Length: 93
Image (tube, rainbow, N blue to C red; front, side, top):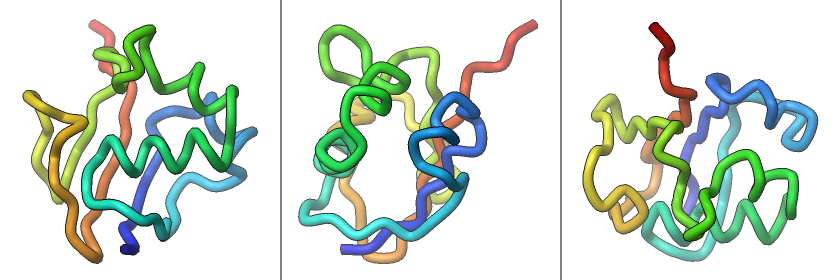
């Protein structure tokens, strides 16, 4: 499946990904499977920037799925072809 992802809110990933927004194809249907594929392709730098010690997206990172902020069961959220996901650092202040 292909989804559009945007990591513009996490500048630390630019060195690893080389772009902020792009289509990403992966085999799976959940945010967890998407993240697992990113870790598989981009390795430790991606993992350290995005995941907590339990292997979930760090609570300081907000996930927006088709303009809706994910609050609960973020990793289990089901994705569909063409969905949009944005990853943003928590706002300070």
